[in-house]
Length: 70
Length: 425
Image 1 (tube, rainbow over the protein chains, first blue to last red):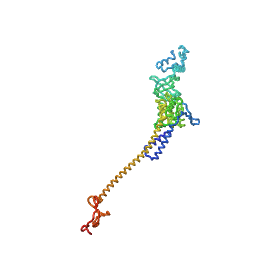
Image 2: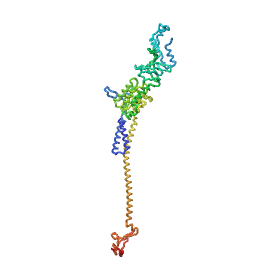
Image 3: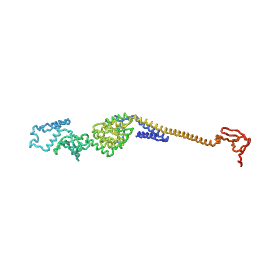
């Protein structure tokens, strides 16, 4: 959900910057936060291709993922 | 009474040939083969009278030999679910009726209790209920005409789920826009998994697909689906769950109409997408899931964005972030410019006011000035030092003085001084 929250926060920031007149320091801080979050969100979009895995429940109740040949 | 064992079957065949594709009786009546003449048949003479038991047993044997199990159309009446676990009812036609029994072991495949008046088709073996000598049909499968029973079962389960609030639209959670991981509860070798993998790979290959294998049809499928849902819940390290299977016969999809499966799905802590069969198939799982996808491919489309779109969206967000900041600065700059303009025009207005005031003062000053008097034709006498000579006493004979006029100065000399008569004190 971090992508969600990042994007939602960026949208809030954009709105805040557009709607209200805020002290320049605050505006810059908001902008920097927005850029930082955008960087995180974009990192999620730039990941390597993922594999198909299979969920395996171990006997001790733990979980592991094995590659799944599709 | 010499009849071929096939004859009753052939007679019916004329009416409804499609029912009797396999019509060879399994057990012909042996007694006749052993007894070529009527006289030798049991019961042919008083001396050879058969017992009731023999008769009913014989009748049962003949009937069961003559008829394979066959589908019968009719209307249910006098339906009783007996406490011994078996169901008893009659199948009625327009003018006739046959008693039926449905053993408890065969009820499992029947989705809901039939009701009196319901039009059904029943797969039954014609037999004789020996204790009463009744013709009876042992039914092993039963379905309401037009899916009535399945619909009824579904309607009852749906009502219970609704009563428990599990169908409330407010329960539906939004799906994550970009999940890191999507769990897929389905058969490992079904078409659904294949479709989901293909579509998700095409749209957003960065998202990890985790198969949670489960049996999706047949005996034990509901229990296995429930186990898989619980397993995903305990694991928890996933953002979206797809549960489903490809299209199939109604019976094949039925596990997804299990109320227990639907309740397990409703209780799943992770947002769920249900994708069962084709567009037309709507199951209980579809009703309780956070999102209903018409097909497994549609589920994959709902689960992940197109990567390129998401990237474009992120790029667009950066732009709007930038332009929002620029507007902040711009607004400030505009305000400063505005203030400066105000100040300037204020100053200008102030200057004009000042000028106007100076003009007015000047006018008044001018009016008070002796020069104005001169303008009217008077003259002022002054001495060399500029002091006004306002009285005859300021004058002395032969002394020079200046006469100030409107347009210049006249140098003059006093000849004589004559004070006004009677002005002396």
